Image (cartoon, rainbow, N blue to C red):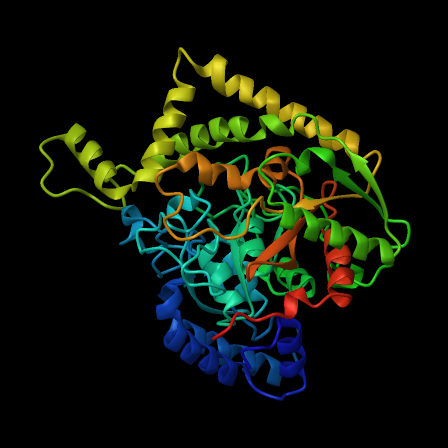
Amino acid sequence: MHQMTLAEIARGLADKKFSSEELTKNLLARIAQLDPQLNSFITLTEDLALQQAKAADARRANGETGALLGAPIAHKDLFCTQGIRTSCGSKMLDNFKAPYDATVVAKLAAAGAVTLGKTNMDEFAMGSANESSYYGPVKNPWNLEHVPGGSSGGSAAAVAARLLPAATGTDTGGSIRQPAALTNLTGLKPTYGRVSRWGMIAYASSLDQGGPLARTAEDCAILLQGMAGFDPQDSTSIDEPVPDYSASLNGSLQGLRIGVPKEYFGAGLDPRIADLVMASVEALKKLGAVVKEISLPNMQHAIPAYYVIAPAEASSNLSRFDGVRFGHRCENPKDLIDLYKRSRGEGFGPEVQRRIMVGAYALSAGYYDAYYLKAQKIRRLIKNDFMAAFNEVDIILGPTTPNPAWKLGAKNSDPVAAYLEDVYTITANLAGLPGLSMPAGFVDGLPVGVQLLAPYFQEGRLLNVAHQYQLNTDWHTRTPTGF
């Protein structure tokens, strides 16, 4: 059962080959057996899962249908879930039980999805390796000595190890696409505003976006269908009709214009990854696509701009965690200032503290214009580059990451080295564009992903290209040894 995709599960449930309850029990047992190796879950929700599975079976018995009805999933542990710990991977929220469901959680529950648990993540989504979690690092199922990527590494590792067919993640600078690439999954960051952020604990509000992680583009289409849509509770949610993503999967790629930016192939990119990227280009050309070289001249400024904007927004968003109303509170504070200082000092880990400090500095009176304002201007230039490129091409293709997964702890003493792993993904967040990573091969036994970017609200186009590619390749079907 655990080898089935979300689409296969939907067909099996519809054909009454098994019940949601049987499937849920099977996967919960598999998680109990295998997850101690991976540390991909923070909280398992067995009672809720079995309750939801029985309800889904009853709905199907009454004639109801739906691709997600009875399908097991998990949520990254920054989506609020009523009455269940929502920790954000932090000691600060270790004792926090959300009083309501995030919109994404509520929408998927209404569609009949079964929540198996909450997955491990970099603390407050800050990281590229899933090593900053208060609950310990997540291991990559392809090699347990390597990172799975971050910050949605728990979701990625769990799906890659076949503990469940799909999971939610969030992407602020590549946190869905990068772990998808490093664990041989398909991961999609939707257009900013396509998926509600209400009840999704914020890192950087103008960059964060929820999306699906699964083994195939077909499965991502199913999960995105349940997640997407306008939410009046989220002021950044965009009132745009949600198309049928599954219906667009089988469109022809004949004449599709693919742009390959020359800036993607400079120093820092592993040449073996470059070869796999070009092999994927050739595979798409055989399906009728037309390929041309393009330029994104301001890409070189993306990392410094991102690492001013994101920490600035984080310092503002995380100011609410002060030990007063909820979250970690220090023992026996002398006064209010001591309460603030010690609660935050004890509750936040080193990476979160580092980004809060950087952000507070960038927003301070003497430096706002020099750093934050300038970074926002660069952000606009990056968006303009994409707009110009999409006048010439339909899709932009390149590597998702410059390197395969690195060893656990290898970059801990050099945070900037970890930041540079986001070089290809952060531009989509700065511009608000949809992006997808799909499996494209292996280097030294570790997975490699290729990234596709499209114009606003063209998630269907990304899924169509990835699905057609996956019909003609088998990278996405490979399973890590032992899982």
